[in-house]
Image (cartoon, helix red, strand yellow):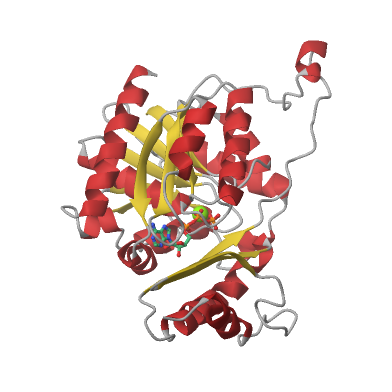
Length: 356
Ligand SMILES: Nc1ncnc2c1ncn2[C@@H]1O[C@H](COP(=O)(O)OP(=O)(O)OP(=O)(O)O)[C@@H](O)[C@H]1O
Ligand SMILES: [Mg+2]
């Protein structure tokens, strides 16, 4: 069996494209786990570099898998969460200023013909928010609800790929027509812009795009309102999150984390943001749970925060493949274990939204 030093040597033989140094020397290998036939680590890069490092992640996985006796391997590419926005307190009451509340004239009405709005959030990037948003939306739909999915990740939209949709949405009857995929109504800035444009949007434009998708999409009709709009947020606690909070009442948030402490610390921050704006955290979900990265950390964190723990999803190659191929695992294998895990989470979420 290879030991830790073999693993480190294999990883350091790969070059960091930015600095030209070995991955280990460049400080890119974090949270390395080596145990018997398993190895995994977190490759943490700046948010702007995420796409450039995807091939590095793949090469690192291949290098680990090539070590004799190594059977379970995983490298997770995560991004540093962008800094929290500057506290904007001008114009607030002294009381609100003391509490450091964001300047948020809160919306009182949901988008037209939408009954409930659910945010899927995380502190850290790359922990599986979009994967959870898509599959949770499908699991809610499987309960007989009509469900929409809004990709609010205006800087790095991934929902079109995950659902296998593309092409400009139609503008008809004064509204953007959502794309229908696997029975979900979906809207993403990735559909509105050419591939690379979205990445360079500045704050105000990004917020404007989000507002437009939220309020000008034909999510439902008078006769057939949308039961739940699932919003896939970008990582962190920045402008887009604040825009969303200002533009629609949120009926709840689910927070996705991986079991590692670095991710849990960010999950805590996301929970705090929602608490501050009085959005109930419906619960925490542990993603990529299992022997490589550990398990149980998120459940313990939920208990500390006094929030429900909704369930754990395994680190599973089929989950990643489903996202890459546009056939999310809940749709591709509705009877499988992962779909069952999502069904159990959806049951709790649907119950909480019903009570909201
Ligand atoms: N349980 C899992 N098992 C295996 N791979 C997973 C799992 N969950 C997510 N992934 C993969 O990890 C990568 C990141 O997932 P995803 O895009 O859902 O994260 P995210 O939190 O939305 O990222 P971002 O912060 O960039 O929006 C994707 O390649 C996805 O397929
Ligand atoms: Mg995402």
